[in-house]
Image (cartoon, rainbow, N blue to C red; front, side, top):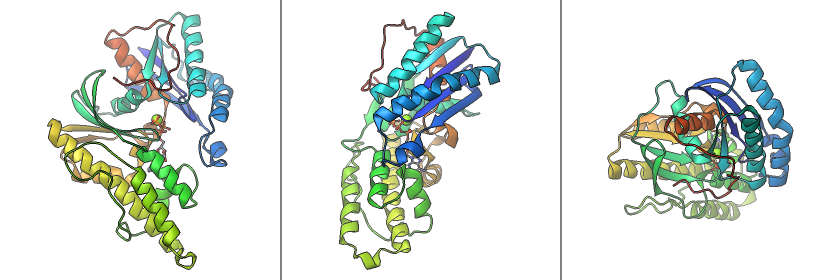
Length: 329
Ligand SMILES: Nc1ncnc2c1ncn2[C@@H]1O[C@H](COP(=O)(O)OP(=O)(O)OP(=O)(O)O)[C@@H](O)[C@H]1O
Ligand SMILES: [Mg+2]
């Protein structure tokens, strides 16, 4: 079965065609990073207009190159930016209606979890998922297909959002994650001690706003003459170390509490090299890390989740619409 996956929740137009939920036939996306970088972050109005510009071309390209006829369409229903989501949802509805094939609305975070199903060796349920992205920092017990329990969430900023905000404070380009990772390469991760949000006790909640504020004060308290290239590398490396340390510690705790032995890591921050390395080295679980091209937003993960929902008997009519604050469960 071929599923066409469409993802337009934020600033990437992602379109893919996936066979049986795991074999990616074609996966293309149009990134808007250079456009939003001029403003230091995503501008919603520009994002939705860009999706409109790219979506028809991308769908046509994916279909023509794959030579496959989709049996169903899966589309991100939410969460995300309303204007952006609407472009994908309405396009998907029109395509499914015209071709008389089923449409399946997908939760964006379920998509990030399903990016692990695109691995050659994919996880069997149950497993723990750590979803770390621009808008989410979540530990999710994935009990069975489409049966989730959120056991950890952030009280304030998401970890990806924290990377983006700290990069901005340091004068590094958007998006912050990759630029901090790059700058940190030559830095000492233990040069500056930053606080680890909500680190004491047994709770699985995250907090990243304190870490961001500490970086802000450190920048303010450092005399201009001391702000050398090495200082920038050290502060980036120290921030990155703390941000990742919290993820590692909380995931360790979640694995212990749930007794689960498999871990999926998804979302944009799962592209972070330090997180990937430390997860493999330090966590007592079989780790499922999607390749970099499926960490960020993409149509393939949405198609995979859509296939699984169809396989498990889910159906949808055309009455649903985009929902920027769609709950996962
Ligand atoms: N190497 C990296 N290290 C750390 N963070 C990274 C890295 N690469 C990307 N990111 C972060 O990932 C985020 C983007 O991920 P993604 O596209 O999944 O988020 P989103 O779709 O905007 O949010 P959500 O998935 O929560 O709706 C950005 O905050 C970016 O800084
Ligand atoms: Mg995302």
